[in-house]
Image (cartoon, rainbow, N blue to C red):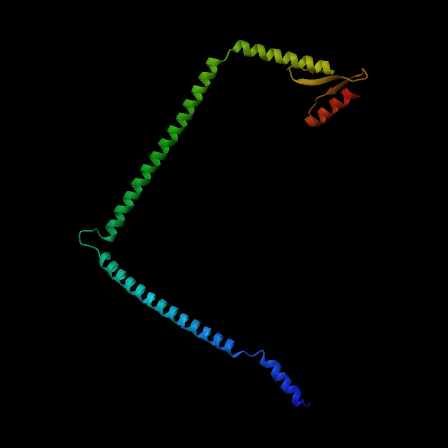
Length: 195
């Protein structure tokens, strides 16, 4: 494959517009500046690390000097024994304090409960409460009967049956024998009442 000389010259002229020596020079100069800045940063980091190392070496020497045990201080075994005795004493005292705090809390709760009960007893009127309970029971029975429900109790006072008057005037008896859930009994009662 042969390339025409004129075509090659044309390609070189077209490429000449893409090659900009000023731009290349600026790129090289910028790269040199970055390399110089990185070198300065590395030198600063090394200098800082060296200064930190010197400071740590001084701190280590000071710690070695301060860690030597003076003769007036107990030996490690005697010190450990004293610490163990103090720990046991502290735990015993802590348990005693905890027990006493629990007792105080329970007595405060009991006192509060007794004060509340005393206030309730002072405020209540047993005769009026009994009268209200009787009135509400009678009122509930009257409402039930008005809706067509008449409860029947056994000898022990437990509800055993319910007579239900329907809208058509029929009376049905629903037995409460414990074989169904309360929801099922309720559905059966309302079905009987609305039939």
